[in-house]
Amino acid sequence: MMSVTETTTLTARGIRSAALADRLEEGARALIQLASELSDQEWQMPLPGDGRTIGVVIHHVASVYPVEIQLAQSVAAGQPIVGVTMADIHAMNARHATEHATVTKAEAIALLVSNAAAAANAIRGLTDAQLAAAVPVSLYANAPLTCQFVLEDHAVRHSYHHASRIRLALGR
Image (cartoon, rainbow, N blue to C red; front, side):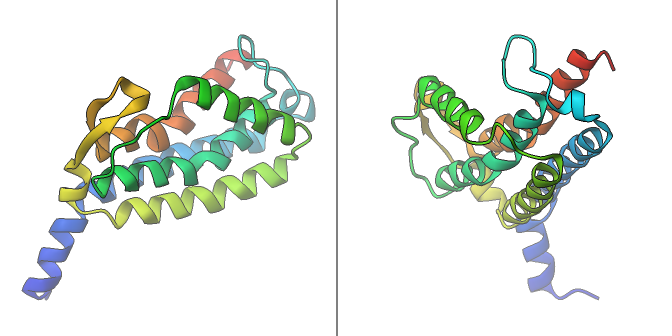
């Protein structure tokens, strides 16, 4: 039987954060499965309307989990997000594509596995109060957004978004 302290901790840190972490892990597993099924030719295929190869996009998802979690943790701590623009995001993505143009499937999958696990663990550590914390976020015209929104719109959604675009490009 759980003590009152354990029950309170589970309630404060458990339900919402665990659900978010589970959804992140589900999306990551789906992207890992998709990546593992790609042929070498598909791995090198540029995504229509994007230009990056499928392999680079999969590595991109893996590589930005830490940044997305750091952003959410800043919101959870009550720190406004200042000076982040879509131009910054596009520049970061372009730099990543250049630096990782030859990424292998094994490298991308390994990074996806480790960074998704770390992201999920970080999310599970958030309390309901932290998830509900809202601050101005420059990326969204300084709208006051919650930590939960930032997580859902970035770290949680990211693998689903790109897996869908990859499947569409491959006709799957």
